[in-house]
Image (cartoon, rainbow, N blue to C red; front, side, top):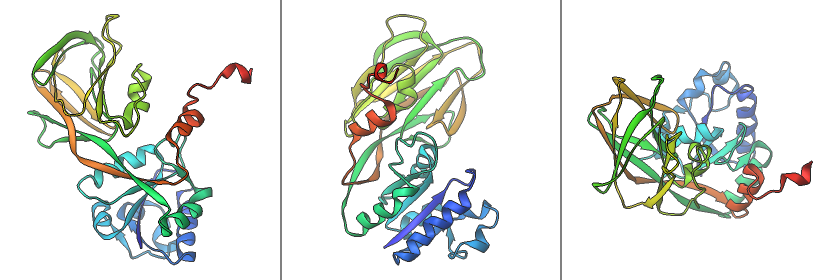
Length: 292
């Protein structure tokens, strides 16, 4: 079994955490390979046993049985983008804050490894989004969400939305979040969108600060295509994918967004319970009065 490791090099103490992870892998006779970004960590090439085994994330996806994202949810989202064209499953070890996607932490990593070696795990396919725009040379991709917003422009923008070429509405707002079920607990949630089971085949549209009481979040079928046209006095608007890859496009351009061809495979332990995660990390349904 080969494991590819993609660390968040910006995290403090990342070298000591990486050392601990690799020591556990060595103890369990598991071969591992490191992302080339690991070279950015001061002292990594000297201290880590596999100092000569650095590869691009995409090469790791072809070489390894599983990709281990070592950081937080943002690290997992970025890693998912890099391996989107491969079937290599992804697992997250959280050393960040919330860790909603990254199921494991450093304290239970060895337990995960034992379960993985014995086949005591499940793989869950997660829906992604693909987008295209005449102003952008390459296609857009997101595991969480694609966000159209006003960017640095201080005023609202006007959005016209079509679903399968049928007009839905035109309204003014700061922007629009187009989210997968995975992303429904992210930005979409913060602007009032619903929480969607990660195995549902749907897409969520959540307006950002709409100037109307009637532009509410909308759930549509994952088989439908969304077209968004923007009208604004600003020359450019902002389009971001998973809060990481940002493009500025002309307001005259239109975007088409649909369910992606790629499905990201996430590894879960047999003990994983999505609804328990909702309770523990987002306090869903928890009566906070009991804590007062």
